[in-house]
Length: 172
Image (cartoon, rainbow, N blue to C red; front, side, top):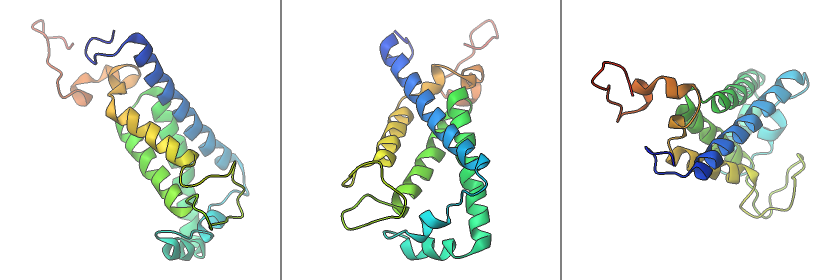
């Protein structure tokens, strides 16, 4: 059992695997966009219909805004994924990933009556893979996986508010 978290080895392994898989997905999506010279978020944003739809369509029509959005999207995905896989600043990466996924969902929710040029991977009604991945990140946020694996474990004084040095002057 992970003594400090009260988790079994299987539970700890499942949480770490979930974080690694989501990290890989973000990282791969970022790299795929980075190496594709034709990728742009313009079409995705130009079809926004829900909250912020008008604002997102206006952004899509602004070439300068699209350059900035594409840069932030590509590098956001890549760096969030890398951070999750390495366990480096994992909690901030989880929060950033949740914000990014929420923006994707707001731009293109899977509601009845909304249609998009980008093909869907199935027939959804309210719940899609973006929402599922958002909830999975919320689960990771609820459990301090940064104490289970990764580089965050090497900096306990920064990421562990319960951390207390032992009497020998070294950290626990």
